[in-house]
Image (cartoon, rainbow over all chains, first blue to last red; front, side):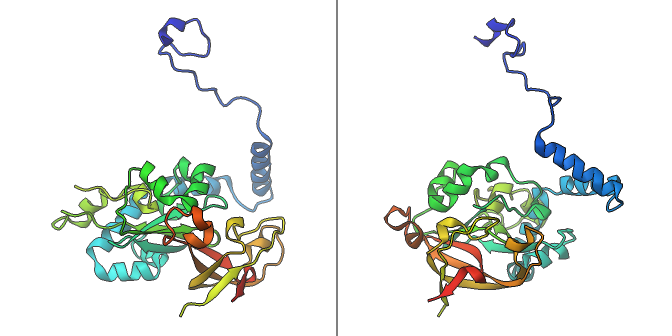
Length: 213
Length: 87
């Protein structure tokens, strides 16, 4: 019983371990980051305010941006054609500032299910979807997604029928990928805003499906 | 008829953008993606050449042989032209 160990100094009164505070010595790479940042500011290449703006811009990007793009593609066939031809331009057209990102949209259909991974590092369409989930960067996901994608999908709760072909995309170089999930059944009367609420982050990686209403 | 290519079986050190599990494997060009500055040179602040980049599609049977979970499933990866040979 954890609550019997109140005298145990690394467990909180609730029985959970305390999370270590971040006031230990800096690691080598933390020192390197601070040194490079301060040198860039000192030499006038960039200002502290510009760095803060970039950090804020990155934090403001979220899967909601991608969900809006997907919902538009579900409701506007011409937009969907443009999205599949050039997902970067189609996202910019909707007002999302995704920088110079080269983006490819791959469509889930009754025949094909797409799954995105980067085996070399953790390439992800951050400029549209924000920061990737932690599991996307793990060695386990990166190695297993290419070798046994169906098993990985089952662990995410996606059990694909036999007739569906799995297409894995290893984002190894300069392109980033977004999955255009299949529009869920029973959503005929819904507008783009309501549809966007059904689009999950995982469904745009291919590790999930869009929610049903 | 799609162009068939093989990823070169080279193992140089450094910032290599062709995953080891694809080297020596045969696939077909899914689409050409245009030219990009070679990231294997960019990573070392070298003068980077413009290289053509392709998406190559492999079958799981080609990648994993008898261990393939489903032989007809496929995998697409971006491979630079200097890593590819026509077959």
